Image: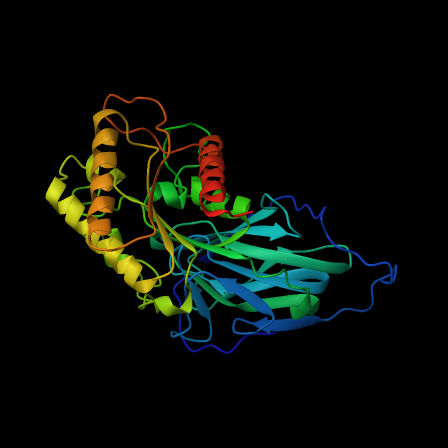
Length: 381
């Protein structure tokens, strides 16, 4: 079996749990033979132009690309019947597999502790011979582990001309566990948390991007705030990690914002600041103002939406919204425009002022409302 060149050593083990694969949307052509030709495995390395890679990328560490943030993705189009990936992770990486335009993933790849070298992972097998488009989508959070992507092996031929069109719109989401989709797949709302229940795709952010057919960057980390974190610490505040290709990994490097300018930046922060019980008005407003100014300096033409909800309730929700309104007014007084506010409805009314993470159904509803507002406000089709 073909192996890629190695320049670094990884400390990693793998567990792959294939699910039932559905390929109902595969494309076929009338001039294709009834019986497939004799196929061979061909290699598509990590830096090939036959791939479309989305998300913040880090090519500096070896013969692989590191995809750390939630919703990072690799898409390939090929004529053939099967696909394998060569990959690794320094901790854990959960990757959804989408085949031929599916709205829900066909299967889930779970990477964990892959050892000193990457391993070959089956992605899809036994497809009908023809044209197929497969997207690998990182559903787990950056701080849970990096996805080290070495490349693909196609039983058939990868084709650049068969890749889907590049999306017309681009959205960058910035936030905490809500934006990451923490516990969104939990079968018991508010039940014990598990990495398997996190899904950036099923978060309001992932579902908004899917609904609007927009390319997504999802810069998020659970428990983070503008000014103070949920645990009352000030380590790895979101503004501190925003400019990186990941969170706390040794593979993290600075991201060059000129590489990717979104049409809209959606910032959903404030929940952890207020839920910490240690928030102060001046610290929050100053931190938020400075962060939004910084985003504006990176993306002069982007529309910036300051979002709140849906976990805060009662007085904490009211305070958070008031402070964000002050942030917006302060920035506008400094001549910074194209700023907007939007609020997601709170779920229930917990007496402690903060609710459980949104369920899949609730996140989908939040995405529906945000998508409708974006279409109406900005004229997106």
